[in-house]
Amino acid sequence: MKIAILSDIHGNLPALEAVIADASQLHVDRIYNLGDCLSGPLWPSETADRLIALAWPTLAGNHERQMLLPGLDSNTSDGFATTRITPRHRAWLAGLPARLEPFPDVLLCHGTPTCDEAYWLHRGKPGAMRKASKAEIAYHATHHLLALCGHTHVARSISLQDGRIIANPGSVGLPAYDDDPIMPDLPEPGGPRARYLVAEREAGFWRVELRAVTYDFEKAARRAELHGRTGWAHTLRTGRTLNQPDSGI
Image (cartoon, rainbow, N blue to C red; front, side):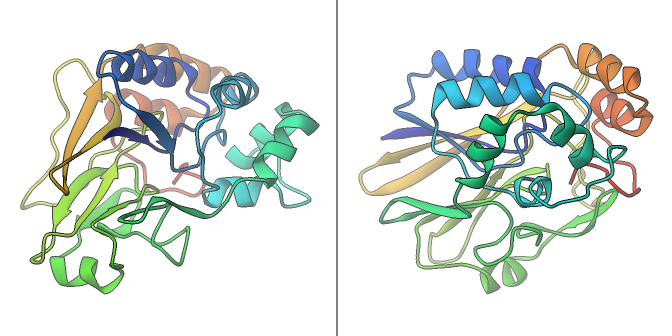
């Protein structure tokens, strides 16, 4: 069994297409999406159309929940995306579950198993994150051999002492690096990559591979600038999330 897990697309259609192309070469059995699909100043409607057609099992992240709230400010990421999606897209968002257990030993959630806004593998806030300790991570752990989360936009995989794995694929559409001074995730040559992971079960055990895919991030950054979102453009070009409201996380 080989599955691909992606999260936090945030309307970045070029990044999504790059991940789809990469995953197709790996012959995965199924692709799962951990949420935060559309919010942001990029291509929310086009991304919604693509995801609905793909029909992947998809979670509602915090931004799916927030996009369905009334009275959103159109200058925010959620508000921008909401003004550009159709009633069909809204109905799709409203039907997404908060968590899934596709197999008895696998859990999918957006933040932690009980909260879509909590960080599991990191602590802090956008622009000032550190890697969570194993004790902090184990506090939220369930019985599942493999638990997969998103939300932070930072890729990381941890094995607990008993072999349970908790992994975050990072973000497809707004990839970020953490600010841990001891073990930093340094940007790769050529700029930020679209992130996802592949998990493969062999002889009853899971193995996780974090993947990073090149894509035209400059096209996405220019799209953000077109809509007046210089903070997003900075993150798309550098992988560094500015510590500011409405950062996308």
